[in-house]
Length: 84
Length: 233
Figure 1: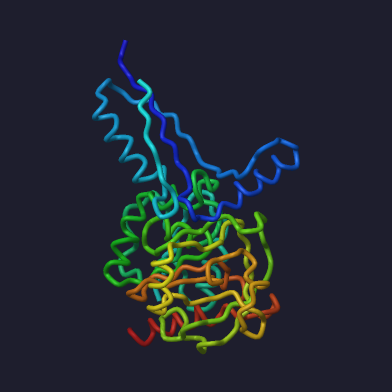
Figure 2: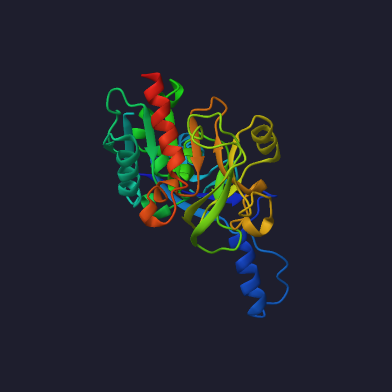
């Protein structure tokens, strides 16, 4: 069977960037009576499957994907996790 | 004035834009499909119109900004060619790196569709030569993500270099947060790049060019552009 790897790219808003959607979710959680919610920031998760089993190559491809498209680094940070 | 309107999948303002360009300049624009790799020879002005390219998936404008025609648009801009980017076009221009910053979700989380007042900050650009600096124009707006954001250094640079071309104001031109309906930083509605050849704006001047609509405040932008190219020819 051909080998492939699973990875996750997590994109989050940089601190200091206003997040109206996170604020709305925060308000909704509070109105639902969910206790102890101090604040909410919304982000995105991309689950990606990569051909091959070379971790270094996979990380390079994921970095390219995040820089070129998945994140807008003006407002967002990203984190790459290769899950195996 | 030879103009090219870029047609991305999912946009919906390309016909309004083409109609206005024809009406004001007398020349039918070329409609250029996003998958093309070249602009028609001799294109003076590239226009990226409004709409919802790729359904605003990922981030508004993000996927359109990476489509094949954008390499040609970038080359056109690098050579000094003019680019007018309206609404979704502005979002695409920011995502493509043609303009700094980004358009975020409106502060009140609502899609807002109504006329707004813009103060024209500079009249010494090819796009605004049909207006006087300080003049207030009324133009329609229709967007959910028009809240202009950039880091403090970028905003300072923009303001310092005269990069802010349109600002949301009260009808008399005074700054009032009440009229900054989408929460944009410094009430920024439109910006120009440092070279002065790429203009991005959220509102739709192309929809206020005929008296039958009740307002012609947007006409000056297109008339100014047409005149600019007539003089150059």
